[in-house]
Image (cartoon, rainbow, N blue to C red):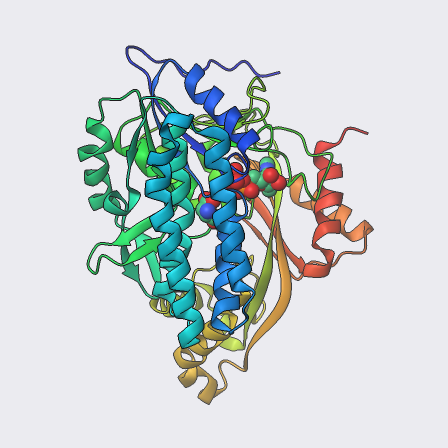
Length: 469
Ligand code: ADP
Ligand code: ASP
Ligand code: MG
C-alpha cells in the first residue's frame, strides 16, 4: 500500500466539478448532483453535459430529418417532453416558469431547425453543430436553476474555437481570457456552465470540442481560474484498470500521474476525454474521478506523481484502427522515412496513433484511425512517388479492421520482463500481434491485433497483470 499525501491547499478553495451525461440523465440522478454541489463548502464552477444520451438522440434525429423520415417529429416531441418532465420534477415551483421561459424558445428553435433540415434534405456540419448545442444549452440552464443562488454562464460566449484542417480546436488563449473575465469575476458561490459547446472565434458559428468534450471544457475552466482541484463526476467509482463494460473484474486505480492518465486516455480509456489532462497538468491542478451515485467512494486521484514506478496501471483498447505499411529499401532508413511520413501526414491533419518498433527489415508501419486510412495512404503515395518510381519503395498498403491494445504505467517500458510477459500471454491465447510499440516515453507497451481479437486480448492482459491467481 503506497502512502499518499493528499494535495494540500491553503486559504480559499476553489474547484471545478464536471457532471457527465450519466450524472444528469434523470430527475433522480440530478438530485445526487444537487446534493453534491450543495454539500460542498468551496467556491465552485459546475460544468454539465447534456442529459444522458441526448447528444446521440439529437444527432440521430437530425439524420432522420435529413433523410425525410417523418419520425424525426416524434423524436423532437420526446426531447421536449423529457426536458419539460425534468423541469417539473426538480425545479422549485416558483422558478419553473422562469426556467421554461428560457428552455421553451430553445425547444422551438430546435424544432424549426429540424423542420428546415427535413424540408431541404441537407444537413451541413454547421447546422448539425447548432443542433447538438441545444443539449448543453438546456441542461446547463436547468441545473443552474436547480441550485439556489447559482449563476448561469453561456459557454457560447466564453469557449472559443479555431479551424484546424477540417476540425474545430479550442483557441486556448482567447478562451482562457474569456473565462477569467466572466467566471473568474463571478460573485456567487456556484457558477454553472454547459460543457462541450463553443463558438468559432472568427465567424461566431456554433461549434463544439468533440464528443465527450465537456471534460475538456472543465479542464480549460480549471486551468484559467487556477482551481485547486478538477473533479470529474461520472457513473463509475474511478479510473479503472480496464473498461468495466468489457472487463467486469476491473478495479479502481487509486492514484495515477498526469502522464499515465494522458496515455490511458489517448489509448482509449473513455472515462476522460483525452485533451482534458493537458491544461490541468500544465498548471499542476489535481484531478479526481468520482462517482456521482456513490459520493463517499474515494475515487481516483490524478496528480504529478506516479505511484509505484514501473508497475502496470491499466489496459485499454482503441478500435477502428488501420495499419499503414511502407515496404522497400528506403524503409530501412528509419530516420528519413519517419520524418517524411510524419511531415506528410501532419500536413494533411492526420494523427498517428502508434509507430511500430523500428527493425532492420525493409518495412515500416504505423497505425491511424480507419477514418484516416485512405487519406494517409494517398498522402504517402504522393510523398513517396519518386521512390516508387525508382523502386526504392515497392508498396504502400493499408489494412483495416485492427485494434490497439495498450498497457500503461510510468517507467513500464524500462521493465524488461513486461513485453515478453504480454507476448507470451497473447501467444498462449492464439492471438497474433501485427505490430507493436514500446512507447518512446517508456509509458506504455502497445500492440496491434485484429479487432475481432481485441476483447480477448484485453481479458488475457488484465488477467495476467491485475487479477491475482
Ligand atoms: P460521462 O457521461 O460521465 O462523461 P462517460 O460515459 O463519458 O461518462 O465515461 C464513463 C464511462 O467510461 C464509464 O461508465 C465506463 O463504462 C467507461 N470506461 C471506459 N474505460 C474506463 C476505465 N478505464 N475506467 C473507468 N471507466 C471507463
Ligand atoms: N454531450 C456531449 C457528448 O455526449 C459532450 C459530453 O457529454 O461530454 O459527447
Ligand atoms: Mg464523458
